[in-house]
Length: 295
Image (cartoon, rainbow, N blue to C red; front, top):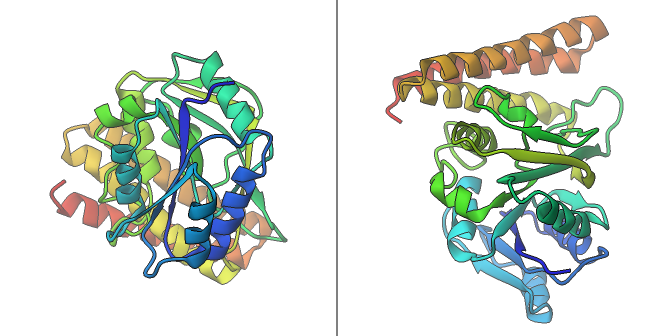
């Protein structure tokens, strides 16, 4: 089977997690695909250097910049494969992941983006898993008013490189590492992709696990950042003249926060209550910052 994709892994100071991700990628049923690691770590990782020396299909690029969106754009500029599969450095693909990805790309030539089932790992009790998207059947996602969170999460997805380039890549003002809006980079990308008329394909056969390594005490801050970025992303559309889309996106963020509040009250969960209040705070912060800045 020929492979027309490269896996891009963007990382910063998460050596042990990156090692598990690379082990999972190279331990699968198909292994002969190129991997590009864009490393923004504060210091070079000796284990990563050793892996690169031992694996001719593994390339490591040291990037002095900061931010996940920037790292993804670096990967897009460096690669020439038809498809780029972005895999986060805390994501564990199942053994048949690369094999199933190759099959999906061959079977759906009209798709611009391919995504699969993202499960959480290490879940316990009342923990609220981050960036988990379960896919229970094959679907085609299209149309500008498709919820961008139902298309793909940045944890793991493949995009046709030419389409990503036509869209201008990822907005470096959004995403992990961006000081004001530390998320929503993937949502912004999904929204622009669907607005362009492109379609996304989802399949449950493409399975990965997103490691849930944060403590419960860290979750309110994480979700505050998520909603600050989401409302900033919505405000970006409004400031750009897409009033209807921007207000729709902002309303999705509000409903998300209120759903968490209802869940907290229904379960009598202090963890969920703290997350709900953090989401509402983030929504307000992002709205003010997003509407007050020039995009």
